[in-house]
Image (tube, rainbow over all chains, first blue to last red; front, side):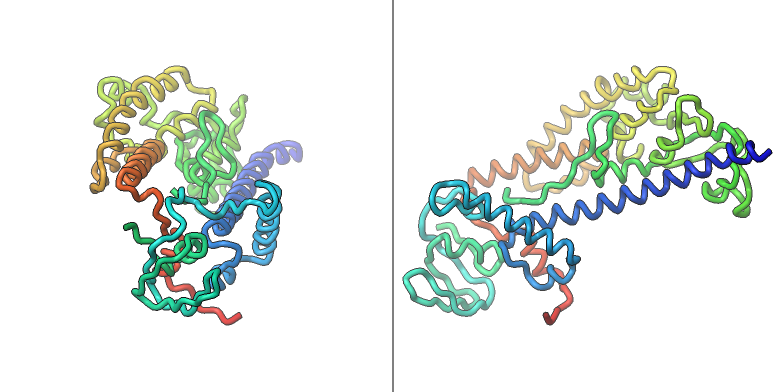
Amino acid sequence: EAKSGRTDLIFLIRFRHCCLLRNQRCVLAYLYDRLLRIRALRWECGSVLPNAVQFHMSAEEVEWFNRYKKSLATYMRSVGGEEGLDLTQDIKPPKSLYIEVRCLRDYGEFEIDDGTTILLKKNSQHFLPRWKCEQLIRQGVLEHILS
Amino acid sequence: MAEAYFPVGPGLGPEENFLSLDDILMSQEKLPGRAESALPRLAFALGQGAGPGDSLPEGSKLEIPLWLAKGLHDSKRRIISVELPKVYKEAWRTVFSADANVVDLHKMGPYYYGFGSQLLNFDNTENPQIAQSILQASTFVSRFRRIMDSSQNAYNEDTSALVARLDELERALFRAGQKGLNDFQCWEKGQASQITASSLAQNYGKRKFTEVDV
């Protein structure tokens, strides 16, 4: 009788095990998806994350992000000769050195390479070097205008 | 074009991708089955008992999700035996071979192809090879032509009418086709070199994140 009781309960144990595995799978897939999105953040927002995003990340995720940043930086330094190659720039093929941009919101002062500062106010238009503006355009501060 | 987020896609064929969110949703779909032996104390969990101590009598009909069916199924069929859902049976197969384009596959379970591939794992159907030929020959191939055509020719239109009758795999194909079309049009207009704001930055502007003082 004890034996039959035991074999009966095998089904129950198996059922519970299935449920546990299912929960584990869902949790793992969720966490992995979060990491994939955090990785995408490095390519879209650059190496400094906005505070609001960072607030929603766990400590381990911030740690993971920092380590990914470091890996990426090491790789970029090793590629492309002396100073390395910044892969996060020029995501779209560049056509010219200087581009026309319009400011979408008030940003403040912005300094370019030859030392002059430009005041970025809403709706002002400027003609600026491409590599300085790329970050700001991706963040939505500036808008690239095609002539 | 500048998207950096690459989620894990659904698995192809009889293997699911463990980390794929699409596969997890797909394996939640229910499957009809029978309890092969009396299952003690499971009645409550499976929604059929009055109290937590009841056991399911042998032979009772169950609707269980795919992940549970895969876990409890073994070749000797001691616990659960599964049956094919209606959509994969003989009657529907003849409908598909007649004309596959008119069927609303989204209603038949939004993961028709994925779920069908998973059913091939349970080798207790009389002819899995027929099921396989349905997935290949009649349904998928004949519908594919229509999907490809419509995705490549619907530019800047409301595509909800076209997409409503497709299941998830077909919708992914449709979206890929649309993306290709949009990218090409963008290139033709000379916008391929225009730097755009990242999608995250755009969402960030629209949503109100709670302001944090760090």
